[in-house]
Length: 82
Image 1 (tube, one colour):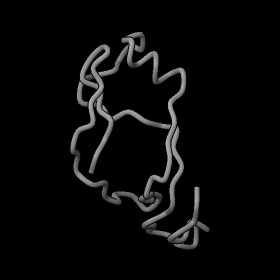
Image 2 (image 1 turned 120 degrees about the vertical axis):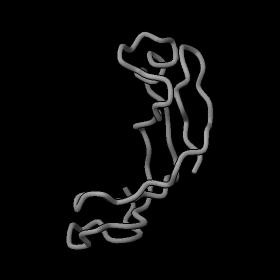
Image 3 (image 1 turned 180 degrees about the vertical axis):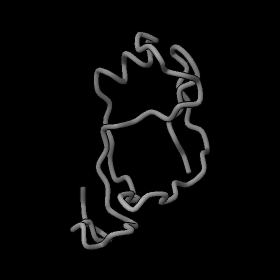
Image 4 (image 1 turned 135 degrees about the horizontal axis):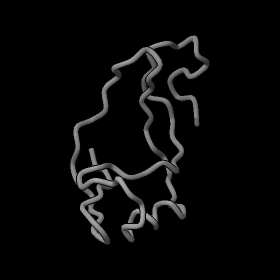
C-alpha cells in the first residue's frame, strides 16, 4: 500500500509498504477516505521533532471506514465511518 514516509529533514516520499495486519484483538483496519496535515507534521518535515527516524510512516489526521475488526461487538463493525 502507499504510505507517506519520512526519509530525513525536508525529505518526505510516498513509498510502498506492506498492508497492515491485525495482530491484537483490539486492532481494526481502516480504508482511509481523507486526511489532513497539522502543525506537528510540519515540525517533522523541518526536522524539529526529535526521535524521528528515516523509514517511519507519517500521518495521524485521517478519517476512514472500518474494513476489518476482530471484535465486531465493539460497535466498530465493517463499514462504520470513523
